[in-house]
Amino acid sequence: MMNRTDTTPSIETLRQLAREQFSLGVRLRYVGLALAAAMATSVVASLLLTEPHLPLRTQAAFAAMTAIGIAWIAFAVWVLRERRPLLARHRVVAGRMAVAFCAAFALGAGIAVATTRAPAAFGAFATGMAMVAAAVAMLVRANRHRAQLLARRDALEDALRGAG
Image 1 (cartoon, rainbow, N blue to C red):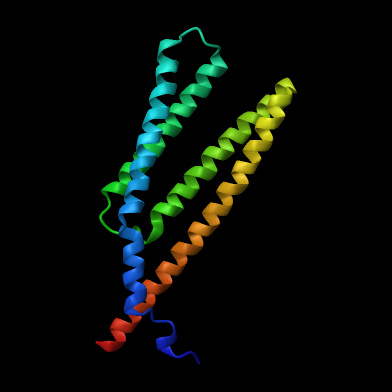
Image 2 (image 1 turned 120 degrees about the vertical axis):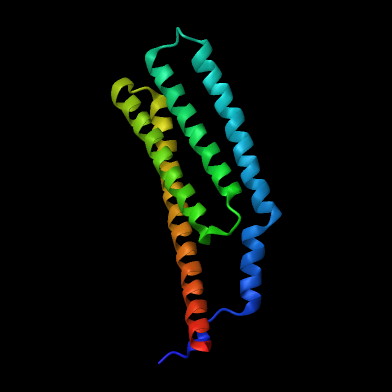
């Protein structure tokens, strides 16, 4: 039988978690994400809007890139608006977005390989598959981190119920 105090996090552990989740560095990274996504999206969107004679597949690619950029901007703003650690939910959401967007890129590159057989398309497809693998690994890591935080929260709740 496991001792109940073995799973209960210490006060110092909780303080460390709060510092990590609320730190200025974390907030600045999300500001950086929002700014970088806004800059890239504005460039791609302006090309899409000001170059009407681009091939249809280029216009479709620019539209997809614009939508992806807007999604990253919305995500960064959502995280910055939250005033609590979110129990790492934002990491899981980012991981899911990354997997979806990388898979869309890999799919597009795969279609380019099938239709053109161009060497650049093979390189793009290989890069896309590597990005999907990296995104899946990050999503798995985010899910594990969230599960650990939820377990710590549950242990605290159990300890508080037991003390009361």
